Image 1 (tube, rainbow, N blue to C red):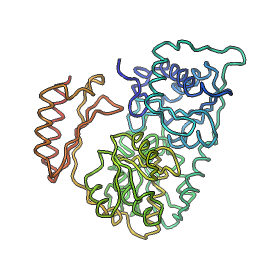
Image 2 (image 1 turned 180 degrees about the horizontal axis):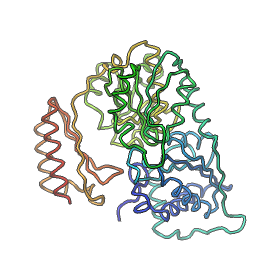
Image 3 (image 1 turned 90 degrees about the vertical axis):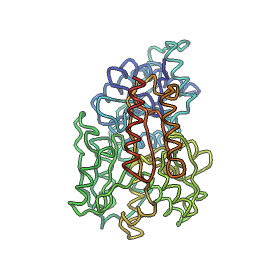
Image 4 (image 1 turned 120 degrees about the vertical axis):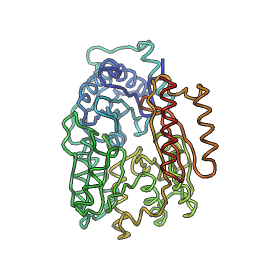
Length: 449
């Protein structure tokens, strides 16, 4: 059986792969493993994004937690970074987010945070998984007053907004900002925070109905935001994903500014103000080659990790870095939160624009983005890690690596959250790399079916 946990919790189609039974078992095992050292009745905070299956899975999970004697606090629809922050602030024993991030509505996911607001290391996830597979062997289920209870809170999101605004108290009174909420968890928090700071907000895709999350909007579908920024003559556009832990931006000309560029802009500004620890940014192997060239020119150090914001975070903690993230828009400001935070990223980016009085297009020119082609090969989930076991695929990859050596690179990796193998090629000619990436992805898909 494949590992239950991926790079970002447990994911699957809700009510098919990720069932209420599975959610209940994760609630039981997760609550037990994460709180077994406590000498008091433990409490777990639970939040979700806007997808329709959120309540079903959240309630099943909380029932599981209560069945092993833990209490639950349900904070409802709220960004993932808000749960991370509030778990630590309220000193509860663990946090859980029910979300499938940028994925379509039929998917959902369950991810855990420890009492400090950090995602779990592999060893703890393995312990939770082993307990589920053993059918909770050795766990005593309480009765009577030993059973947990659920408390419902609707005010928690205001605490998160206040934290963001106090962390980056920038005056946005002269800024016109288009905000795409992806019909997701940021539909309230991001709008209110920017308004609190005086910004003129034009909100789009901020009317979630449970079924429209990420549907042709948000950070995975930028076209409407790009057009709207130009039409409104806005200073900037901000695009969140479904659970608001990532951010991409659009400059005043309608051009996308990705996570690498955001880190370059904010990182250099932090360094200039003595706030970038050791002049270092932590990034992944997926970051654009232009990002590394920018760092070399600016005298910054880039620490490289494998893909996944959890690995970025682990490295940041190891070396005491203050900034890290991914090209996809997960950016971590470790002195302000313990996970990728779209709202903090937005406010830091806006702060640079206000303090430098420069348009985003000019700020983004600090790095030259080399052409990249990213094509997904859809493969059976249980096979995705084994693509190199197929000789024809291994040979094709070796051929491409030789072809692009010295003036680009080839990066193949299985998705941590979806049944896909991602093919990324970087080079000088967009048409050539797109053709090669498409051919390789088709080969992988057809070979591994």
